[in-house]
Structure formats: structure tokens, C-alpha cells
Image (cartoon, rainbow, N blue to C red):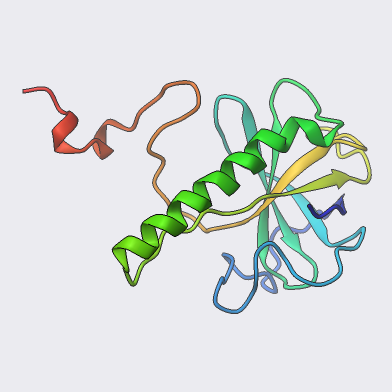
Length: 166
């Protein structure tokens, strides 16, 4: 796992930041030195699910946007709060690798492997010093479709015809 310290960054309208992460020219998880100022938070709300809230940030090395995820109900001050998420992403990628090998598609399935980061200073709200957050590359607006959630919500428009009642 990588550790660094997320710090505040107030300017959101900086044209030097790429709109979304470019997997063709940059690796994820990031390679190279993970310094205490590698990831900066823009403190800009992006979205939320049942348990987490996402904020926009950027990688100071690649100048690519990233997402910082935090829990809604509490400030995770230890890595252990994120170990299930990281384990689930790893297991999902194992299945995807096997699927891709069998299907031999030109559009393989890939799961993002999040990294744990630590807030260096209070940016309250939303972050507090010492809080552990997950960092993932920002995929851009409308780059993905949400199919379901941890709370049981399902996107009815994405159901397969096999699951529809007659």
C-alpha cells in the first residue's frame, strides 16, 4: 500500500489539470515516490453513496485528477477501515483477469486499485488531520454507469432482460 498526506488545494479552475486520468500514459497505482504532498484535495464535492462521499483532487506529479473517498458517518483514523475495499478491488481484478483471458476481448475489464492516503491538515469540513481516505483516479464525468450500491439499490435501466418480470 502507498501512504502519503493529502493537503488542501483551493483552486478548482486550473487548466493545467487533465480532466480525467489517462491510463495509456500513466500507471495506477502511481509509480515513483509517494511524497507527503503527492495528492492535493480541491475540497469539491463530486458524489456520494450510502456510506461514502467523494471529493475531487489531483496528483501533483502527473497533474491528473483523482478522487478522495471518505466515510460519511465517521473519520477513519486507521487503515483497517479501508482494508475490505482494497481486498474487494483485488479480488474483483483476479476474476476480471480470468474472464479477460477466456473472452480475449479488445476491451478487457479492469478494476481500479485504490490506495490509502492520510490527511495532513484539517480541511474541516470535510477532512480532519490524520483521517485516512481512499485515493483513486478520476474517470471523468459520465465515464461510468452505476449498476448497484452496497445498500441494495439497483439501476433498473441496467437490468438484463433475463431479470425482468413478464
